Image 1 (tube, rainbow, N blue to C red):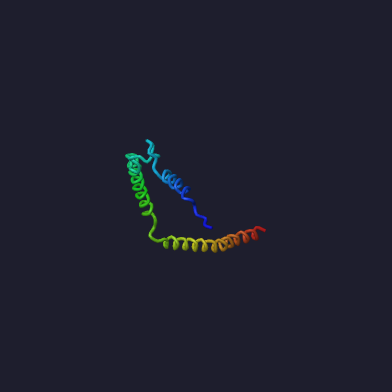
Image 2: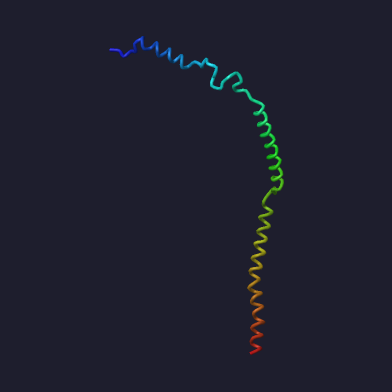
Length: 112
């Protein structure tokens, strides 16, 4: 017993497949007319505007990159010296405060 498709059923299927695969012959080709895929003057204008925008962005970025230092080591060294200076002033403040309190204490003893 074979399960073959009768030849009578194959012919209408292939004919309908060919009809569905063809381009429509009516006046409307689904927007794919003679000029389909070609650029227009509006496309050229948009492309030129994009190129001008890229030129301005490159100029702006190069100006900003010129402001960036070559290395950041100098800033790190400067911040370390500032931190060391702040630490020295923090250490000197208690000594100064103690020195200022001693005369006040001595003056308070003398007044008593």
